[in-house]
Length: 234
Ligand code: CDP
Image (cartoon, rainbow, N blue to C red; front, side, top):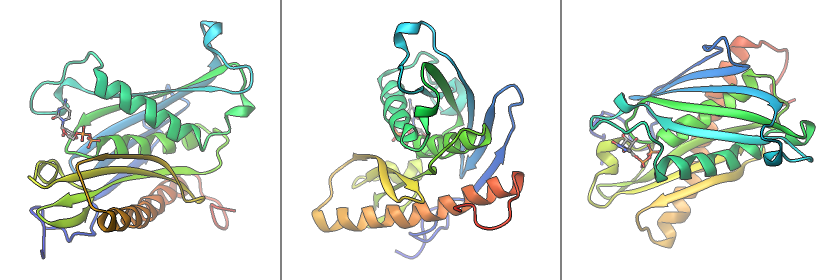
């Protein structure tokens, strides 16, 4: 295959645009466009957890919510969170928690809200990428960032960053992968479809290299708002 329907090569990501601090009432926030996906992520807290029995005396609880706006897809999405929203919220929260130093804020909650304004496949990875930047924008102590991306197969080719059209291909495989950076550990991995072992290995390594590209853009966005001397990893 030479080019894809939208003109990309198979290892191209869609254009990604990031802006931090867009929601002034939040402790931290991020607006992110990823191809035709649009997402806003906000962070409130850490603040005391109510009701208290939900708190953890050893660390902050990360309450991550993934939601799609009713107008984000062509068939109206019900604003009532369904099973998909709840599952994505749960696993994304676990992924984000792995980079936040929650042990510094016992008995508190950190509310992370991600709202998809327009969707064209890969929304959970766009939301998680934005959420980790919103946490950094909030000044939360973090071990790193979560850089997330989708990898898969469509029309016989292993490709990066599938669109909805590609996800709907008859042989489609869609894998969401989130990597902690700079540690390079897998924080989330979800797959739809079937692949053989060789393709699976290739897809995981594609995920790591695509996550590096996402991480570079995340660092640029942070450095633009918070210039520092030297390497951001130091
Ligand atoms: O968005 P992501 O790839 O993380 O999740 P998905 O469940 O694989 O959904 C793929 C795409 O299907 C979404 O990005 C939307 O474009 C679309 N979708 C939809 O049209 N209506 C829904 N209720 C859920 C998803």
